[in-house]
Length: 136
Image (tube, rainbow, N blue to C red; front, side):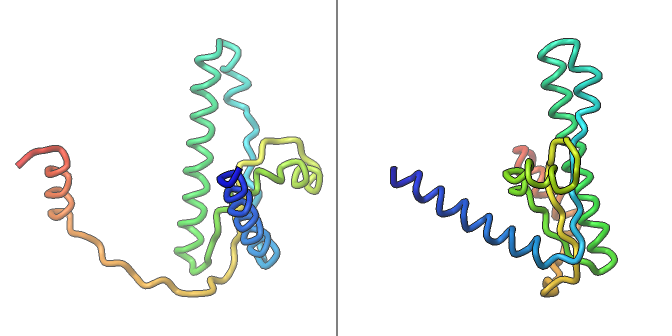
């Protein structure tokens, strides 16, 4: 019971933070999954359906990441709000759609400017890669 209560409190904190972000964002992008690939190829069986669903999820995640990176290049900040899926019915009703909500992306002027991180050289990366693989 105690773990359940902790999870509930954590969930409420996440929802509160997400709500504040959504309320304060000048632009919100709702990202939906139409299920077009799954609907087209999923009819060939359960295995294909699972592969199609995974492919759609990966494609959508990559698209969201690319939108966030593109916004960053032009000086905008973004917040990828995945927890919004728990409000899918309300969001669909508001937007008058019947689609699978994947996430919301809040876009705006960043509150802070992150400190640039220095990148490792290609040589350092190759040494790290070889060590992980057990090569010398």
